[in-house]
Length: 217
Image (cartoon, rainbow, N blue to C red; front, side, top):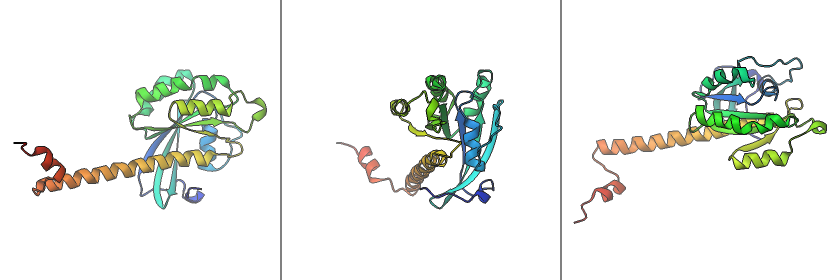
């Protein structure tokens, strides 16, 4: 299991990078319950539909590196859809949630992914979460259907339960790891560019560039 901080450190300021993560999906799929289970560690028995937007912060440690997750809980109601679109700006990650007991929440996943493609940054990381997997007796979306949709769109798929806490931490930490690895790659590429620029300033052009610029005659 991936390492993370203790509950007492969840909301304190972080010295590490900060990432904006959106939870999106249809109304009543359980986005708020998943978020509260992950951040606060309990299941809200009196949860109400999110009107517009809610916001929580979790500071965590992953592989001894600290990071801060800004978790935005968006409304799935159609009347708030246009307002939600504005919050994709600057998002590093997206948790796309459907309800395994509600076929209609699964059938609209492509529409939500369309919004991600249209409004979110090009390099945003997305995972798919089928919530309420504890309610097997009323399941209407099979695990296989979820896996196939995820595979078709290049997503990691989790079936989770905010009630039992199954795969809640695992899903968020998987996304956090993707973001951490992406940031490491960005910094590595930036250092490479900086090194090449310094070499140019000092008159030391890399060998590859010398070959390309050499006169063939």
